[in-house]
Length: 85
Image (cartoon, rainbow, N blue to C red):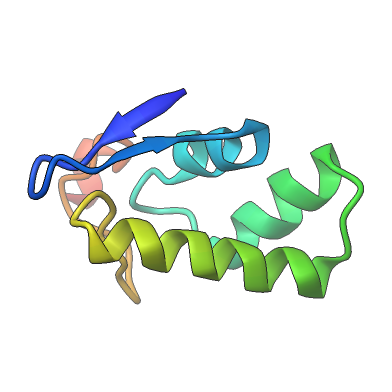
């Protein structure tokens, strides 16, 4: 999978793990749940190492304006049920 920053036109080619993270980043699911529920279950990886790697990847996407990092669920995200918006 490839994604591009609309801010600076940087392209990212996502490997299999990065694609799972991208697809799971729905605006409601905590990063820790993505690591535990997706990455560690689908790939043989140490949870601590996976957490560090995922945080670095998400930070990189965030710096390019591709992904918004939030401490709380993001209102009006596509995965947020209408009653929670």
